Length: 109
Length: 412
Image 1 (cartoon, chains in turn yellow, red):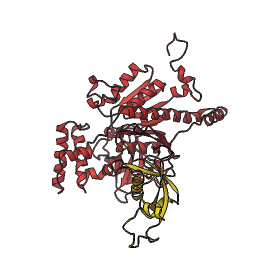
Image 2: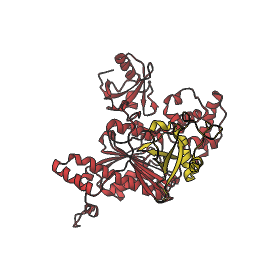
Image 3: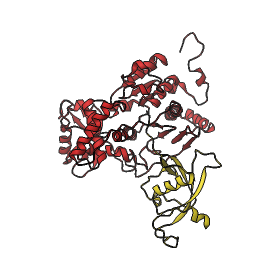
Image 4: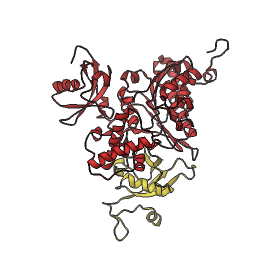
């Protein structure tokens, strides 16, 4: 439980007891994978609010790997690039899901 | 092939399993963007023995290109990239290669050029061009291998229409900052936010000067800033300074020759693999079966997305699946519809097209070629060519259609 509390991405809906209401927040454990890192270091677990947005999940991924905001990143889930303004629920993410970290769209030629 | 040598110039690659030089020699590749990656892809494909290359780039060669774009030299500064690349490739790498070069914007290229290609290599440096190419490949069901670089990162995405994700699947293309431009009304209508004034100014600059502005030219930056400030004053937005204008519309991404070389190498290889797979359909059934078992044995695979980081040295690949709700390749996309063909006299004005459509569908339309509005008063033959396709949007119910234009001098 301690670990869970430490990793939870809290949002403004958290109540005064530090617990969350299921109707507003439902925390699930996901695994972020940064394929740029060596295999023994490239997966980190985090709890995220499944009722939040992809953008919040991206923030959690940054937090997990200390990726600064100036580095644009995106998340892939089961072969789909996740749109930051969508809600996570729209991707049917389940507990222990693997979210890949990739650079966000780049344009140079 | 040099006749006094006992082997072909391509001898070393012909020794590879799966390799089929005759298939490559019969292929035509359209390369859009002949810059850091596009120039390398053109060089690679010409040396691999591709039969025909079509090079497209409207840009001119700048001094800052010379550290990584090896087809160009100091004497070429100010000349068109596609045309110089054609000359250099023919002279230096493959004199028997069929090669065409176009300096027009891709939005004004005739459709026959896209239809002639077996595959498109997207090597452009902006999201608007990428968006246009993406729509074309979905409509014509052509494979696209697109590349992009930014500083230490390079990526290659393979689009196999109706089989995997297109460039617009699941993610906004173009992203937020350039999406402003994708709404053509932004350019001709009232700016809703301050940034629209900068984009309108850039559009105005293109119209007045018929060229891309140079970020390093103080005159160009000042001219765009003045234009943007004129729009900003007219619509009561705060004024821009030149630094803001550079950030908004003239920003060039950092670029490294090493990253370009790796990215274009991956892209060229994926192009060749895709040509093999697609041309295999022309094989006899027995040969097809043999080829399939061979590629299975060799673990041959075309990844949908490959990412290279020069910082870590890692190359990672991913599969991408298509989004059924995607506006470009999804189930309800207009690019899956058979376009309505209309016959027009090319000597008449573009408004004739909309008159014919109004007569046929009882609705008022405006037309788009890529992101640009088709000017009603321009002559059809100055904007379109026989066989071209355009999108028309109804002003009455906002629904879009794809239209195929057929030139017919009797009609109109």
